[in-house]
Amino acid sequence: MPGQHRAAGFGNGYLAGFPESDFTALEAGTLSNGNVPYYVIHKILAGLLDVWRLMGSAQARDVLLNLAGWVDRRTGRLSGQQMQSVLRTEFGGMNAVLSDIYQQTGDSRWLATAQRFDHGAVFDPLASNQDRLNGLHANTQVPKWIGAVREYKATGATRYRDIAANAWNICVNAHTYIIGGNSQAEHFRPPNAIAAYLYRDTCESCNTYNMLTLTRELFTLDPTRAALFDYYERAWLNQMIGQQNPADAHGHVTYFTPLNPGGRRGVGPAWGGGTWSTDYDSFWCCQGTGLEMHTKLMDSVYFHSDTTLTVNLFVPSVLTWSQRGITVTQTTSYPVGDTTTLQVTGNVSGSWPMRIRVPGWTARATISVNGVQQNITTTPGGYATLTRSWTSGDTVTVRLPMRIVMRAANDNAGVAAVTYGPVVLSGNYGNASLSSLPTLNTSSITRTSGSSLAFTATANGSAVNLGPFHEAHGHNYTVYWNARGQ
Image 1 (cartoon, rainbow, N blue to C red):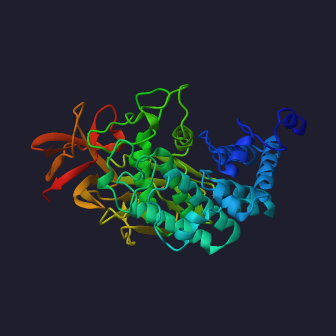
Image 2 (spheres, one colour):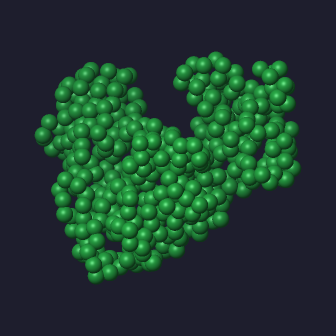
Image 3 (tube, rainbow, N blue to C red):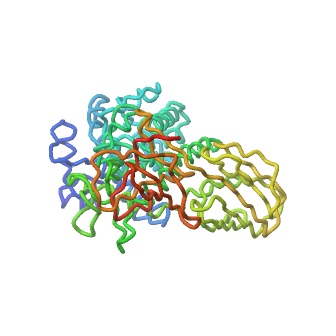
């Protein structure tokens, strides 16, 4: 391998599809070809680490450590000021993947290299819980926050934990649209500016994918905080499930999810993809994360710690809890219906707890076992803990009542979205163009089907059909409305 690198004109360990001179230009502040070199290196490192960690490939390990060594040597020769200048250019999750390599190897060299990618201009305000996101390229930031969690897990330094937790709180509470996505034209806007930025280029898919990853990471630090998975469910269900084109056999995805009145998935500005992804004529960042997203739809349904099982998402699924010899089969029509059942089979003997998320949007949730309602606390926005001596075949039934709720935009109480339980409902406008938000008579919203989430309402004096936003494909829609009524 060293001989091959020298023959190609590469330094020892270097591996990328562009010359090392891009890094020289980056360090000099003269890179002008649009490349983001460390963003690409992060992707290569992460892929190699997965092949080593999950498939046991010694070759992937060797290439990984050689490339990581190249990064160490390249960054180690820079002053702190020079390195911070380099970090002004998008670098993906270099701090995350290098922390992961440290955890995999135990070699502190990789942790030291990871910490060189701590971006002070972003981390310092977040450590003090200050929102200075306005104007920043959004998806440049979220991978850094994921890296902060990984660095906390590697070091125990609470500053890293605070950076990640504060970033999540600020982003979700002050910069997130009702569907769980953030950003307009790839950038954060002023805090709480939602109704002011309803355009065709909202909610870049990469951002939401990475926010889901950050949410999952934070949950492992604080598994009692149900609000984390209230957000996860909102973004997962309303934006990311709908990111993929259901009419396309190749599963093409969107770059943005438009939230302008009369928006349509797969239609947007040309500089941001313009339409659905393609097989060979496009390869945006959101195609990369799109591939990852739709292989991970199941990865956060259940969690376990020792003998405790946590149920975070309500989807038809089968969990093989191999550490305990237990199988959990979840059957549900959720969110069309408000009920899910979990049948526990296998080596279930003994007393152990099952924790079930009770979403913040529900009220009077109930949990039954084998048809008998249990006397346990089901506080919205928390976890209900069901501890019992289990028998194979026990069936847990969870009911989470849903209702219509109008969710106002942070910056304008007169602009709101319609939700039903966890689902955002959008208005179906066919091929009609909308020049402004329709005025919705909120008291007219009526469910018209028990077997689907079909609703009707009156807007601008005319009837309009409403349905789940994740199913809004092939027609123009509105997600936000001028709202009146009760």
